[in-house]
Each structure stands twice: as C-alpha cells, then as structure tokens.
Image (cartoon, rainbow, N blue to C red):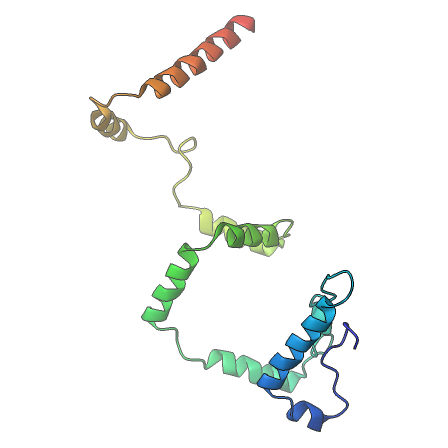
Length: 172
C-alpha cells in the first residue's frame, strides 16, 4: 500500500460504497501497518493543497456567478452567533495566536489597501507620545495614587534604574 495515495479508487462505485465506518477502519489498519514497520515511525504523507481535488481548476463564469449570488443571499448572522464568535476569538490559546501571527508576517499590502487603512486610522486616538494626557487627566491619576506604597522589591528596582540613568549621564 502506498502512503502517497491511501484513498485510491478504481471507479465511482468504489467511492460511493466507501462509507465512514469503512474509512475509519481503513485508516486504523493503515496506521497500524505503518507503525509495525521496523523503525516504528509513521510513514504518513502530510496533506498539501496540491492533494485537494479542486486544486488548479478554475470555476466557470456561470459557477462564479452562482457562488456570488449564493453569498449575497445568505442569511444574516444573528446577534447570538456574533457573540459566540466574539467569545471564541477572545479565548484563543497561545499556540493559535502564534500561528495567526506567523500567517500575517511578510504580508504585502497594495497601495489601495494602505490608503484605506490610513483613512480608517485618521481621527482615532494616538499613542500617549503623540497625544499626551491633559493636565486634568494627570491630576486624576496623581490623586488616585496618593497613599499607595511601593514594595521593597519595587523600590530596589526603581533605585537601580535611577542609578543607571545617573551613571549614564556622568559618562556621556
């Protein structure tokens, strides 16, 4: 049995008669066969996009029009579904976040996209360096911090940082 095409069918009737329980049994037998090899390493080829049956095919104009209409006429997403989607995106694991980050690295945006993003960003609040706090905000924060004591460890760290800054000024 070849590991490159484990679901090889001779004709359509073979495929039609291949049900889920047969697929599970087939997979288990195949995995066991691969594991029983002398080196005990599974020889299963990873899935690649080229293995998909529609890879490299181009949809006709008629098909594309039908897909477009189906997409335009879909049911609107309910508020409940939106909430569930929102909650799911908030509880992503570290691994998922890392994968999402990796997928975006090196992405190139068109000039048109860059202009759109620029327009959307205009009018939004900037970082504190570009948009410093007002005196009123500073006073509120200062009042909220009155009476709070720093721990011994924090005081030690602050002292070390101040000494480093002081020594750096003396050297330069």
